[in-house]
Amino acid sequence: MIPESLMRNLRLPAVAAPMFLTSGPDLVVECCNAGIIGTFPALNHRTTEGFAGWLDEIAARLRPDAAAYGVNLIVHRTNPRLDADLRVVVAKKVPLVITSLGAVPELVAEVQGYGGKVFHDVINLRHARKAAEAGVDGLIAVCAGAGGHAGTMSPFALVSEIRAFFDGCILLAGAINTGAQIAAARAMGADLAYMGTRFMVADEAMITEAQKQMMIEATAADIVYTDAISGVHANFLRPSLVAAGLDPDTLTRTHGLDMGSEAKIWRDMWSAGQGVGGVTRREPAAAIVAGLAADYCAACARMAADPFAARG
Image 1 (spheres, rainbow, N blue to C red):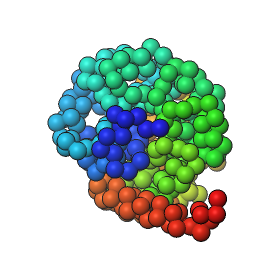
Image 2: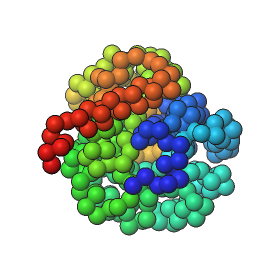
Image 3: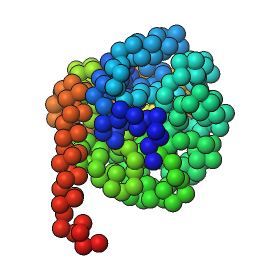
Image 4: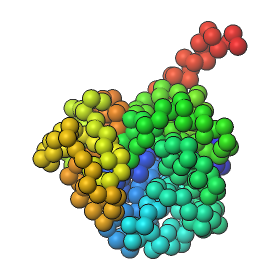
């Protein structure tokens, strides 16, 4: 179930995921104005004051018919900005807050107190139950093949197990590249598709042209799943690890998660999901959304015309 406040002006059941060092005001605004939920991590700006400025800029640039926007807060003891950034979120009444690496009931209550919604990243059933107990409005099933900090569970398994006890909004992440795959996510019980890699090559994404080109040239075989880079399992582009002087086949974990060093790690070693093989060209975010919407409608029409649909 998509919350009513987020359903308003939503033209396609999709969220452009908050991507570290990648998502900023330009990408968020273009996605929202095109009709999907645009989001970005608070930590993508180096200061809380700058983060607040970005929120003001986004609010000023959104059209009256734009979809809602959201921000990602890292709820982890090594994030020194959490309290300050949360105060800004509450003051600005951000419509959607996406939390990662910790589900805190007090944070959820603060956001819901002004009418905002909270979605939380999960990679397994234990995390999902804890987040549900914290009162979140939505759970993001980050399944096998997703970019960034991802899990290993099949989407069929994780979505169905979450739905068995959670009646809120379920988002599905993991190699979703097309409108047909958004339709598939809906068919299997998710409410929204959660897409990152597809939007990393958008003109408005803040990554370098070299990183975009590496993604265009990559396939799923170029994705390395490891906890040796940031201390938490994530998917990375093999060529970027090699360029950084690492041997992707002999990586070993030497440290735990530390938000203080995350910017340098993700700047030099680039993440992407297994859906990278479907990323073939750069284009504006609005064009990406338009293509997804057309493909989604075509996929729904094909399913409606499927001869088995009428046989029960």
